Length: 275
Image 1 (tube, one colour):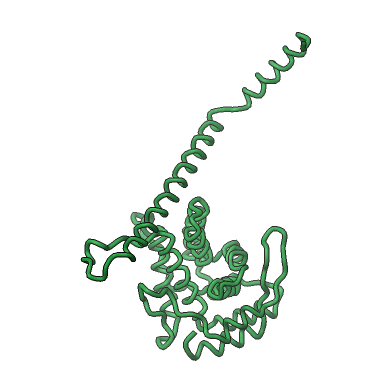
Image 2: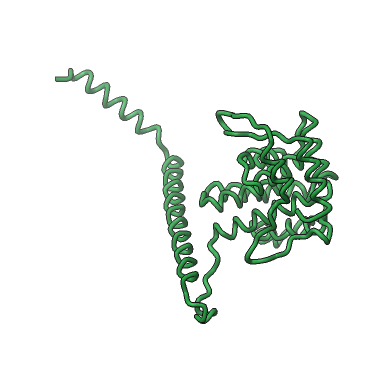
């Protein structure tokens, strides 16, 4: 049997532990539970939408299209937008120059990291997330948007929401500073105070960024907006160059490819034709 004085001590310790929790802790716990419930509902919604898409594909060809129409699943739309946005990024006229800078210098520019990440993503090479995070951490709103779309595609709602907020914050900073060497900030205009909320929604930022990137791409190589294909595949030589990249392993970030001069040359070559 436990001696009485030990019981008293245990009760005293328990009382002290209980007093460590306050209303803020309770509110934080409630918020965490609400987010987990919302995340579960959202994943369920994605499964229902995917099932609806599968049912639609099995309908007879003569089925009425208006009745068979089903909204595109959110994760599928995110995958479409991410590939299209990535393609527009690598088709910027300065893209090859930025990759060469990344291969030559130990100093990494946000634009160079963004372009490199988009190349890795389009070639289905691991490491895009690391370089997008590097670029976003250095101030690129476009990289933050890419991370928002990547996490949405994966069904990671809370991470997607985080990067949407980061993209809005970084775009606001870009509108104020307007550096000369950023890919997409030059034509942005700060919103009117009364419309700030709608201006910085993820979809409005994605549409605005794509429109600005379109303006920096040669007309002969612009991406066609097709519901069947988010973006054309990389040209063979460029895809091969991406796969040849050397990489190092990191305990925290996994496999991290390194840019090369060959990749910059292949990107330059493909810029004069179809990527």
